[in-house]
Length: 408
Image 1 (cartoon, rainbow, N blue to C red):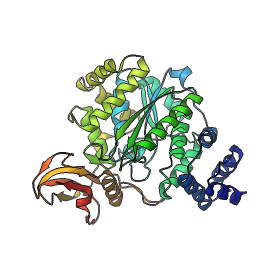
Image 2: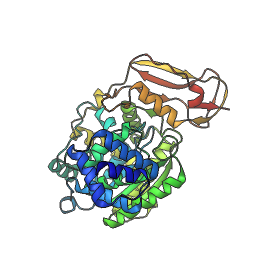
Image 3: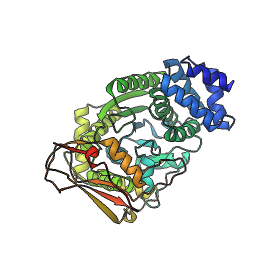
Image 4: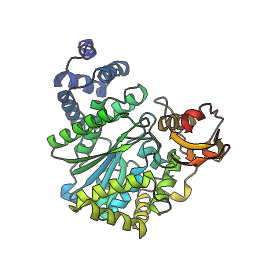
């Protein structure tokens, strides 16, 4: 039956629910091997998935574990999910902003996928931060302080955890159907009533063109309707890294700068304010303009940063103990001019090479390494001027500066 299913999908035919159920649950139980599942995932990436296959997969993912319902305990919950991008630390910024404005947030996040960093990896760079809360701990914390950021509970969509890890190292992260099923199964199972999707598009994202982005947007809204969830999708550019810092501990430090109002008028800040405003608007039933005023006030008053500190402290983290690599290497401009391109994909590849992400399933992440950009798109530079600083824990050779930074 395994070969029949593989051949059927390889030939571009639609798989039935019972076939998908057999294969995916077989993988979860260990009866289907890594190489067999990798073959099916690759066939799905190459030939695509029909709407019905995506709906079936989402159901199989959701049904693989617990489905949480916090409504009777904490009321309406608003969640946000990003499809990932280079330097994307938006959750660390948005969750405390939204919670400080009185909208409860339970955010169950994942680890990195491909060249994009994961929120859980970033939080694990904070010594002591507990990313493995139980359902009881989640409910108590959201009641007490209004915000939780944790990894998926042990029995929440275990199917996605297994498939997610395999996709990361088999070149199968870009399938629209697999992305939709992965995202929406987690959101549905984690108990969110209203969901804001931050859909990144560009060279540094899982989706690199607007046509696919629109398809993914449409599919996630369709899945939301089936499960009676209100879904709002905001499409954001990811051709350039989001913010100045790329790398786990470095991104936590930049998130702190934004929450303290030290970083203003950047693309990162604009994206975070838009997403937070949408979440507050949906959560409170107010206009986005009114919600934006609340977002700005939460930063200016210090409430957003205070909520972040409360969140980290409550989950055992110690911000004073964050460490970044002591050894640095500078990248300097090879000529004078204006920066026309900061290639997110090339920057992402470099961050993984430094150790900030995984190339193989069993790789360990170095939380202290990464890249700090000194310039942004459109800035003028002189030859020899500092473009970026690498934080490293070993020797690294940079041969593609002209690919990462294009200067005209």
